[in-house]
Image 1 (cartoon, rainbow, N blue to C red):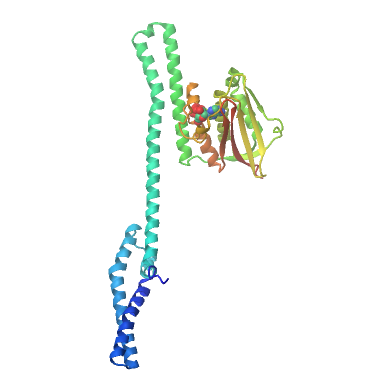
Image 2: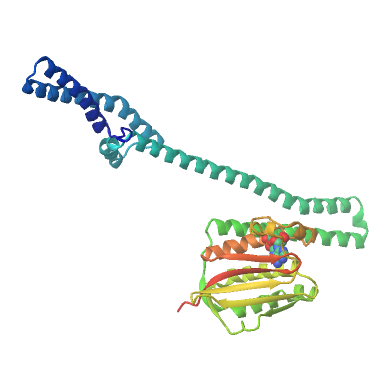
Length: 349
Ligand SMILES: Nc1ncnc2c1ncn2[C@@H]1O[C@H](COP(=O)(O)OP(=O)(O)OP(=O)(O)O)[C@@H](O)[C@H]1O
Ligand SMILES: [Mg+2]
């Protein structure tokens, strides 16, 4: 069916003028059956009403629509937009205008949603931050107060309290360092110094650095059989060292005594290398898997182990890997173990 919904003002004016002029000229023909007069009446009424209707439409309706456009795009119209308002907008049917306005409204509500989530995120972040700082600060306050209240006279007691105070201060220092690291990574301030290096060598170096922690839990760290032949990757070596360090610390913390940690390295498609670190520890329940890369996120099981983490380690890893344009992922099963893996670019010539 013929629809008048999507007509431009010119078409609408012409259409209405035609509806007016045809019956009028037919009427004229009935009164004076003269073709010339009837056709002249048709032309005159058509032109007259066309111009009048178009003038009314443009000056009263389209001017208002133009205002709406200017308002929703919040612009002081530039030259290009002026042309748009003058030549393109008047061609648009009311339906197209409606679509534009709806699109605009959708965009706005998406923006508002984003702002709301950011706001919720910010609140949660501050709460977490306050909580993480409270624990060591209150502990330090307790030790110092007890010392002042007399414990300082007892050398063994005061030494123990001071050692505990020092431990809590270290915890705060780590927290501040991690936060600083995250905010620098987020702001994109930290440039990457990429170079070619052999990933197996770096993994072995990290095993070496953490050897004391590893031996305390009697964990056996190795490189998977078949993955020993050297593979060169192109990345920021120091940042990747930090990633492997964080992953290994987790594998030790959430691993089991006398357990195993195995690193595997695969060339995936000639351009990328996949590095995975697997442990046979407590594992992560499925409902937590999607969240462990969030700042401060710790699973209940992780918490109950009371190994003093703050939940920033994996968040830092994710930032570093994503800054390399790569991805990090996790697979895990409760009481079976966890595998965390990430990709890197392979050697650049
Ligand atoms: N290998 C793993 N096995 C089991 N759970 C893990 C493992 N790695 C991470 N998790 C879980 O994911 C959570 C987040 O890890 P993340 O490294 O970010 O924080 P953290 O180790 O608790 O603290 P931080 O690394 O800041 O000292 C941990 O608290 C733990 O619950
Ligand atoms: Mg950690």
